[in-house]
Image (tube, rainbow, N blue to C red; front, side):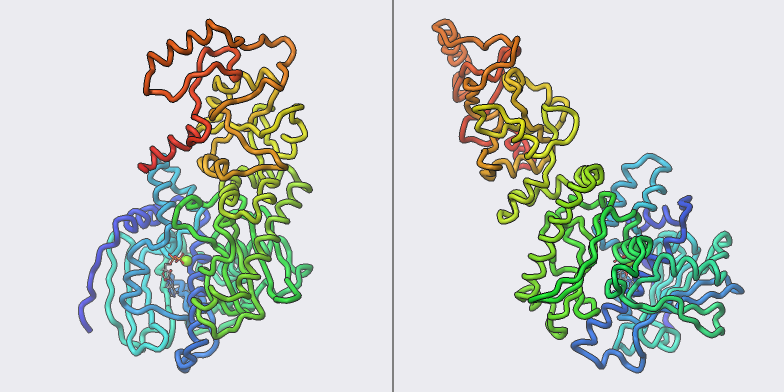
Length: 552
Ligand code: ADP
Ligand code: MG
């Protein structure tokens, strides 16, 4: 045996581990969900590789997960016979933070006040490292499927880990064994009753069977059947089972706001199990964040990178299980497949129509959804021309008409005689926007103005969108011809064009020179003396600011 090589964790891992080791987070059970979810992922990866290389299976049988309790030594062991990790993979997977989500989590923790970080664990899956909430030492023995060698990773979670080759006889024949040396106050995880209850509640629906051994030399018993939840009839599945599945499969900690489970039949056959989260994932606006819908083919996990849904639905979690895609097709080929294209289209349409139904059935729930994800959905207004009409129908806006959310249908129903456009103002801050001088003339005429405060708003409004034949028009851009719409009662008319006004305009032009392209009398203003607007065909002012800020 060679001496183990000691390596330092990447700085962010060390910080994360520090949090885990000193965690005051009360719901420590989640570590089991994380380890079992990793074990299940490893089994699914193996199933996929077996499709093209059946020899990888070796002598070991069907994928399975075994949880072994060792009360005497105060240990808990989670073992899988999945894909396993080579020495290099171990160092990469358990020494760095690869997930953008975990990075986003770390940023949130850093920004949070002292003591608030622990709460964030509960809102966020922190993966393997959560083992250090309950263990003061973790050993990982792993053997990559098909490899002759095995490796041993060990750490006390205090800044460094060791890694070394190990006699393959000490590692699983295939896959990974994770040994937790439990802290004194975590001894209850060696009680069969406790651990079985936690595992079945949290992970009872992972698509790999789970076995429990109450002692290292005890008989094992099966505690979860590994049947894929989505293959069962909807009527047989409880809301709690759906929620548990959502949390374990999607690594989420909240309740799903909406669960969608159906089977598409006809030209293509596939099952869909999709969830809308009730909380915003931290990395929602991370540019690298991709969709999180998994693709299965006849119960075999193929990839979570098939981009089943358009980017603006990236908050949806879940899976599609296809019956017609060939199992032996490569991930790259799948991308090109017309079957996938049909699935992509069908699932996106269905999700949008479910949202529409929700808006009709339960307005309050819908507005909660919109509050969380509306800004993302609006990206579709310029990315998905074909569904723009639908998306505009789903969109909700703040406006000068009052505090609440307004739909475009509401807007158009309240439109003034002779009003030919849907007016909007963009800005970063709702209150400032609502009190901007550009709105005065609109207010005086009772014309509703949409107040758009999301970054994405500056982009879609320029994509020559219209709704029911009415173009969107910025109140800070070009001529606002409001003369055809009468003032509300009691409002004083704006200054009439006169020789005096013309003289004043000429004077202002002279003073400002090249700084402005034009100076005009405007019907926008009723109280303020002056406001800035962009020329007719130029960029909207808010977009200009955004782009300047982005360094373009
Ligand atoms: P995530 O599962 O989201 O990637 P984790 O922190 O849970 O993040 O795990 C980090 C990585 O470690 C995984 O992506 C995987 O590559 C590897 N890993 C963890 N547990 C196992 C296991 N039982 N078998 C194979 N690989 C594993
Ligand atoms: Mg994980």
